[in-house]
Figure 1 (cartoon, one colour):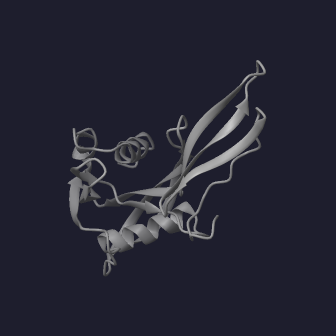
Figure 2 (cartoon, rainbow, N blue to C red):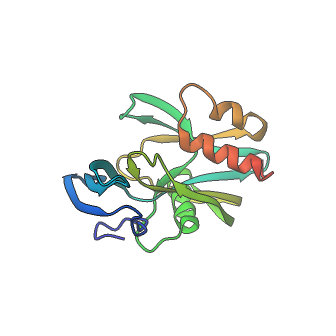
Figure 3 (tube, helix red, strand yellow):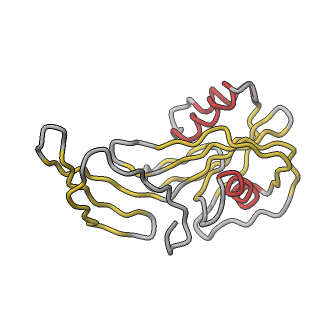
Length: 187
């Protein structure tokens, strides 16, 4: 956890000695820097990283459909149809964050929530955890979008969800969420 109110997964003790850690860049969204690491052969090397808050992706099933959101992603300059997702706030579990993000972004509250998986993402460059949460028994509520969220909610039939998740304008989190839910027999 940190004072910006976001959740950060703690790092384990290093297996290779870290001689120094340098933060080179900080924003409200991520911190970037490097660790000077002693490698097994005695040499040292800078391993660069970007630290991002933990995030949650929500696979929300409503009868025979999944809830998707469509939104423009300025970083890649594309509009994407994706699963609802967001940052895990300080003190929240992945499931609580998933319930909150679903409610805020889509206007649905969930009665049943389960964590399917949580894992490190892009471990060659990121210090970032992602949790995939499955929710059912949805009830309409008022959405509460953040001031930078301009999205629309879509219903995707479960039998089409994998095809949608594999479409050209898709992201890793949506594909992971759909595949995990499918593997668990939930969709």
